[in-house]
Image (cartoon, rainbow, N blue to C red; front, side, top):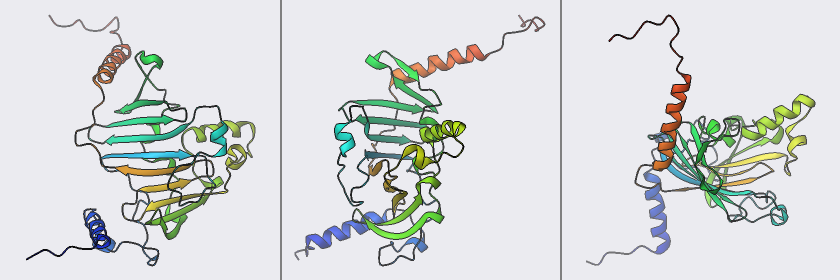
Length: 282
């Protein structure tokens, strides 16, 4: 007997349902949220951490006034005329078992660089490939990644939840918060601390001058991983890829660099034996 073929639209729908069935959910979550079923609310935490082994890309654009549904990144007027080098995208690779992150950054001038975070140490390569160095904690994203995979979304709480909407063709949980109320992390937090020393009344809006007064975030309603965040300064668009099968391992040169550095630190931090120290047994 000849097998009955499904029409293409039905086959695509069945494939999507099969993929959703692989995501672990509790019985209460078995019904996927939709714009017509807005009573469902996010699980806690509102933004899920990335899986233990995962890869994702964050594309960035200053075109903050573009439609929220814009799929492709479009350089804004400021980017088109700016002479300074800016970050256009960062690809993250994470392996919680090996305590490693790999960051591949792509810049507006076409250049790129690769950095590693290994057991909390942020390792970068010197210009001209002249060896490696440890990025200082005051400027390192290793400090923020030690707390969360998406430190830029540390402000998200259920009090900011605004309901279910369709975003990029998928049901999404929508969150908003006034720019001045958003918890700052990384460089922005350091800049605000510095500015408030000279002006206690300084606000984030006065300092950073966002083009929008409200921060908007869309989170995938099934995975609860971020989709798009627009903070009035930058639009971040998140896409998640299937991680490589092999375990994420830093290059041998970085492993050797860290071994030599850690041994040097151990020797430097080991206190010398005092005058009254007992002689070692023969």
